[in-house]
Image 1: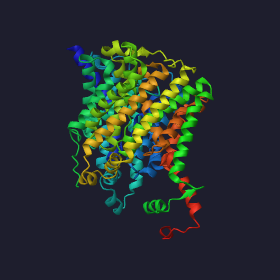
Image 2 (image 1 turned 120 degrees about the vertical axis):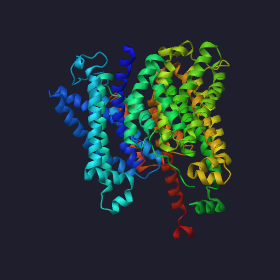
Image 3 (image 1 turned 90 degrees about the vertical axis):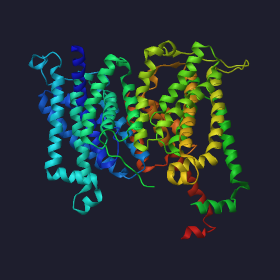
Image 4 (image 1 turned 180 degrees about the horizontal axis):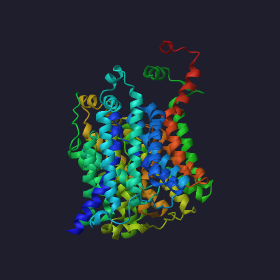
Length: 290
Length: 346
């Protein structure tokens, strides 16, 4: 029983990380219908930025904050400069651009920081908090940070004029433009936010999977699965999907097939959801008129 | 543009007294002669590299049938290439089959896998399909390492194959022989592909890509053609994978990462989406550009890939093949200028 609980809790912790990245994917999908294949690599690059700041002697939380800010700016800049020209291009062009971003971020990180695996510090104490036996403090901390990000985003989208404008731009760009909202800026802002949330996910996952240019491939796959399980156009679904997928991954890994086929589980999940319930648990069902 | 082509057909332009069609045949024959002569002109290592170019060209043609002509994006063709390679390696290593007999089996196995993967793919469009195939590509190395199939796949170590020597007592090296063997397979595969794409099937595939609903209304069986396109495309990748295994003499899970699939996507985008000749430009690109860039840094080829990809999407969306076609048409238009084209004046 103790082992089982341990698996569930650590599944919740990784699930929180998947949830953050899934949330980033959903934010971009909602406004543009694009699935950002480079989201994981952008998060990886942000994590390297934080690593060099921390190595340069900056306190962890300052580095954290600065990284999130820089990621925001870089994400918005990528939307404006690279994504904007292909906004209405055929799907293949858009996918190609995302793949190009993926390989550029991956190789530039390898170029600058080399491919050697690095350890990444956790801001949380080594000893488990509150004397519990089931969950390490990094895991508990990750869950807390994820939830904090979620609440902050919810408050932002729900209660600020800017959040309202962003939701409007995503839902109906034409009417929003007529109502005086700068839809282009909102899209850039959305990309910035997604990159910032992704950076948080990267910083939280790096102490677990270690820092290296390919660290996000598996995480990204699980985040995709999470977003699909929850419904790719529903932020809350994505978060719930993230936690579910995290727990599922751990339980299946521990009790059914072992750890070596974990990515295959993600593949089966993705294909399964797309096949049997493409809208996920909470997504909208799209019906196209012929 | 269509009317211009029709007008040209009626006028049947002749250059130096030879019709365009004949020129094309002469050009192809010259190209083929050059390709046959090539292994006797360069070093063995170069022969090996050009052999890989031919193999990549086969995959890229297959991927183009699916992605270019049928509009189904696959980021997972490295997985089918891997299955073909392992099929060949296992047949040769465990069952002692001669190398050339493994090709049809590898192709067939991949056709079945591709067809089966094509079934769920029917329900996926655009980004979703890209996502599902990407997941397949990322998961493939892990599946190949799986411990319950280790007795066949050799696990992490992979399988080492013996390089076949030239038969019939021919006085050429193993590399030269394999190159010629691959060239023969390539000619066969391209002839088949060309035949498939220029006729009924090709038109049906393009119709499904451009307007699925209209295609169905015209009586094209969408689901059948789409799954078949997946199967045929995987078959090309499988045959190429088998050839690749024989030429490299080695298969291992980590040779078939998602990077390989991304390589293939890069190949068709650079070479030219929905073009047959584009497969060669793309294959040359993915074989030789990394070699030049490798000297700078291990990561450099990929950075250059990324920049090239962006540049092509923005500046040359039809790829090298599209650029060549455009240049050719400009040249012809320039020659024709004295004979005014009424429909171009408008």
